[in-house]
Length: 400
Ligand SMILES: Cc1cc2nc3c(=O)[nH]c(=O)nc-3n(C[C@H](O)[C@H](O)[C@H](O)COP(=O)(O)OP(=O)(O)OC[C@H]3O[C@@H](n4cnc5c(N)ncnc54)[C@H](O)[C@@H]3O)c2cc1C
Image 1 (cartoon, protein in one colour):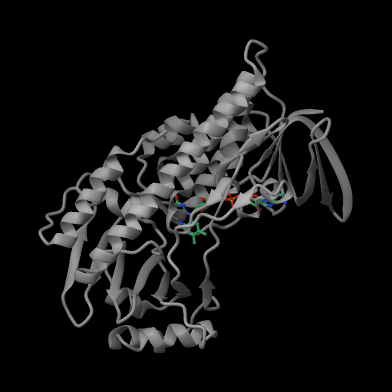
Image 2: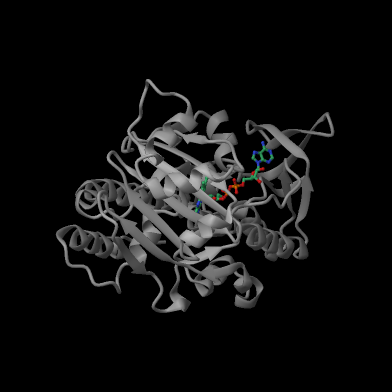
């Protein structure tokens, strides 16, 4: 029997495995893919030092996984002018673009150095929590099981325990618009856009975003009211893009390297984040559409909280009910915080978008990061001032 089984070796699972490995616990990580999987770059406002401290690694262990980001430009409907925002005045403060593939594999390697066992090609089917916690999985076509004192669900959006224990509920706050996006590889896009930048262009009913992801890949998406008559993602995408000739020309001269993806609202929260014999960390705890870009922070923070709770559980002086209740409370607070920020954002967004297209919850690098970059910019219009108020509120929110 192992001390801890962690299901899923994404960022949350690997961070937790590393921290528990350092406590000399016997930890096994079960991963269904051949990990590390390829991850597109993401954004975080945490600076490198904070990330290193939270995970418990050296700055130099992870520094090369981060690069500074970015310039944003916004173009209003019926205007050729672009409002340009320099994000970075102090590059040490971020926001940062994170090479997720590199960061995840780095942390996983450090966990393995601490004696953590990492088994890939292991697809967990369910957990038995009735007596001794046990996971049942398939490996090379065979069904097997393993038991442990504690099982951790770090399966991301698969939310294995959330589904099995029927803990999932839907948050009520989300925007009903559709987001349709694809990726292009075409040098002409780079000639038209600034490097390390995100571009948002207002349209008659929403906006288009263009977000360079790597040196040769750009994400282009449209956000538009749901249209029940048009179900084909490409058709909806083309219709919106047609409004802006310079983008339409670029799109017409390029072949997408991904299918056109229509993202619906997949948000959920869990009623409970731990119980006797189990903890849940990372995105398996919840997914808040506009906030998916909080995922790095949530993964790191929940892993740190779970590590503390699991360590305390080893110590007979602490009551297990109190430890579980405390984990639940802290995770709830973290999720409420994200929900409140989202609600504020949605409220202000309507105002902001009408006068100057600032951003939108669907934009894939997230409002928290966007807001964090606004302090040093000179804003004068009412919409811009309201963004700054929101930014201040964001600063005041309790953070773990
Ligand atoms: C389009 C998009 C853009 C994003 N952009 C940002 C951003 O800019 N900034 C940011 O902070 N966050 C962003 N996020 C969120 C971030 O990617 C996630 O929150 C984060 O990766 C969650 O980490 P995790 O370890 O919880 O889950 P994951 O990274 O999903 O890891 C879960 C692991 O569990 C494994 N697994 C699942 N089921 C099983 C099973 N049954 N058995 C065994 N293994 C299993 C999976 O293979 C996977 O390796 C974005 C997300 C999306 C979708």
